[in-house]
Image 1 (cartoon, rainbow, N blue to C red):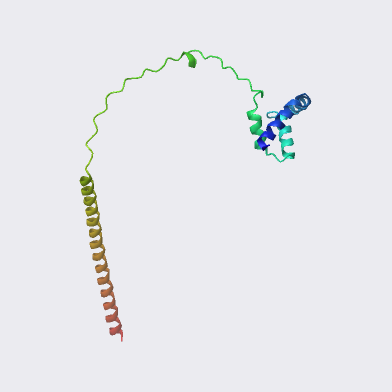
Image 2: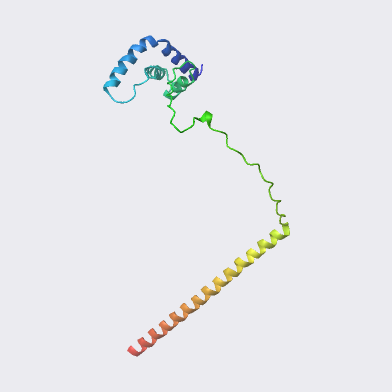
Length: 162
């Protein structure tokens, strides 16, 4: 027997002993009136307690409670109608405009045109890289000239001092 089947049986057993649990629920409701918040589900508490004693997790018990067919469902509140607002059943269906014919698709590029575009892009990138390389070579040359001038002046100054 799987744990889920065991959990189903535990839930059925606890539901069967509801007369006993009704007294517990009444006591719980009285306690809840003194405290704030929603009263605890006594059936769920008992089922979880019994499941833990048999090695069944709380979540498995919760699934069994959710799958239970004759479980009590919370009553749904009926919302009073608001003046000037139609209920969903009386809202008219939206009008749908007919679709217009789509424009014919543009002719697809040939494989050769795609390759040509790729080559042109690569050429532009190479040209950009060459331009950047020329710029940095000029910067390097200028820096080397400044360094050489500095060393020359330092050497001349040390010769004059000596």
